[in-house]
Length: 96
Image (tube, rainbow, N blue to C red; front, side, top):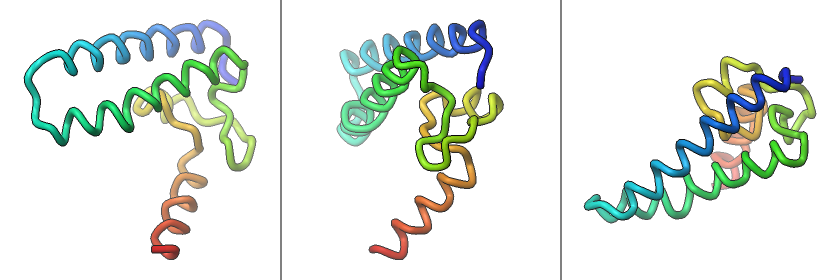
């Protein structure tokens, strides 16, 4: 599990990303970027902030193991560790 200081750092980073995403939505951007931010990025950030509030941030939703800090630094809204994310993607590919 992440140290409280690291979780607070991730919270501040996520809040900044959320503000930036909202600011960009007010600007001029292609529709596909606007759609992605509205339907994917912003909900993922809000979900990560909610997981922080619930004290489950940094815990993989699939295997309940800690998500490495390095992954959360690159993708702070990550819900799964790398191996579980890869397994989810393979399952989606096979289902399609």
